[in-house]
Length: 214
Image 1 (cartoon, rainbow, N blue to C red):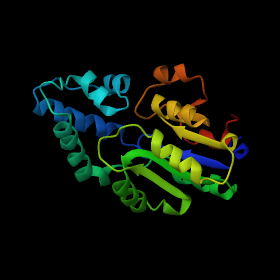
Image 2: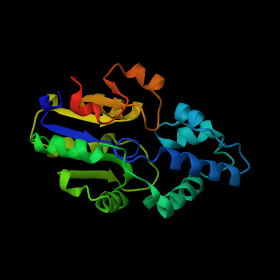
Image 3: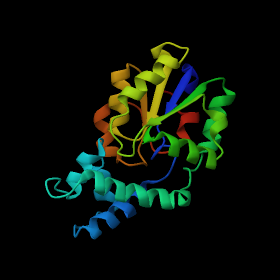
């Protein structure tokens, strides 16, 4: 059960925040504005990756011709404009409340820009659930590993008492590098078939956190 842990580290985008559909819509806007073919949701979930520059290349951008900084900012500017359209996954408040009432601490570890992350967590009135909120100091969604190390150093528990819950192979890789366990949820930015290679518990829905044995 989740009660086996003393600290849960949550990914944000695609794990707590249901922003996959908007992300597809936005990347398609960027692709079309650069005369490139749009993606279906299924195609997006097959190629999305970290660092996101790699996924942009899979989507069709040749960065010998395009500037990643310009393209990435184009996407993020539109995301910021529309971010309040995004809802949480069903069951998020229920699960966060359940974990908190079980005496387990929780934090967020995200590739999202820190200041915007704090703003949107507050907008959804979730701040009460987290002891630490950790994000990057830029908008280009590179690896979370280094800030993950900083977060682990702040937690008052051993590594075998910590679990990271996310929706991507990158979350699994970060957890491995941090020497902590991970659980993945298959309704975010990558599909179940891709996540299966990680050989960790894979959930279909965040609400299974309450009922599953890990």
